[in-house]
Image (cartoon, rainbow, N blue to C red):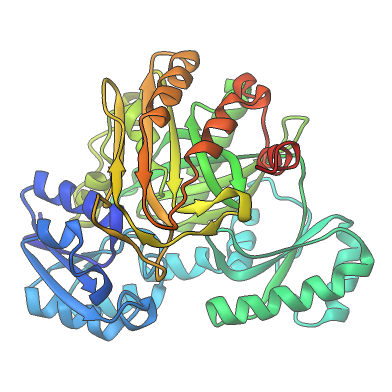
Length: 452
């Protein structure tokens, strides 16, 4: 096992990883920006190193500063969390050059799967079902128009280097393809430094379902079931649950088998997520792979009893999986709601500011992952996530009742700060969600019904 792990992240995920390290008897080191100097994880860690000012590009994305911090604390491994450098193949390679173990897949796997075009090609060869689309980037508008005519409308223009719901544009008619293509390329260049895009059929309505996999360095691969992530705004998730409601077990098991097949084909190592779309007829298609721990990993932990972050660390340290597929027996139902500092009325605009009140729920089978507290600040520099509220119950009705109770206990306030709590309550109260027959269009329909 490692002696010291450097956590190259911030917020709730940094604290989550730090706690996993502590339970494994591993020393905890963290990096932080000047904006996060008073953060909970900085106080929690054995060592903490400032890597720059508030802007992420000068701190958490500053690779030389992060590597220097690892040298300073004598780390032998780096955990990247999610976001920031978690899917940066160059960073993973530089870690190896420094003699540091990157807690995640090998660099060549991150590169192959992080490039959405090469990922589609690899998964198609592995036999995973695909939506109609291009397997190579489309370099010109003329090429895009030719490919779109074969794919049909509506379609999505996606950044090859995209992720986190960003770098996506929807073309609904031949007339708007030109503007969507150019705008998506422009955004992709600005966000990822890579303007390449590919085209794919736009599936709507659809369910967004992901499969959690674990793979070690000894050839063992297994899955931990699915998560339904269909409640989204701007392609970013708000509510996740497992098991996926109103989808047949045979379909979900087949999806999981394809995820394991894809992981083997890619030579995957670590914790990863294979994402699929399911159409109204119950047909599923592969979408992408996330080469990191997911924000929504707590729901899988609640139903399986498996600590995913500890498993990541053990795998990176060279240990074989302690589980076989038959050992994974999910029980009950778990739901997670993301409480963000956003104003749902203003198109989920971030609402930074000082937190004067911060009370989160507790009680039986309620888990809250957070880094925030009264007296703290919601920074304009970073993601607006304040807390992840997760619940478990033996059945879905019980889980819904528990989540409604838990959200009712959230008390977060400060000058200018708004949260998504009330909107999340409206999602849980909607007939489609209660029936388990919702899709990725649910949030937009709710906002049209009640713009407040």
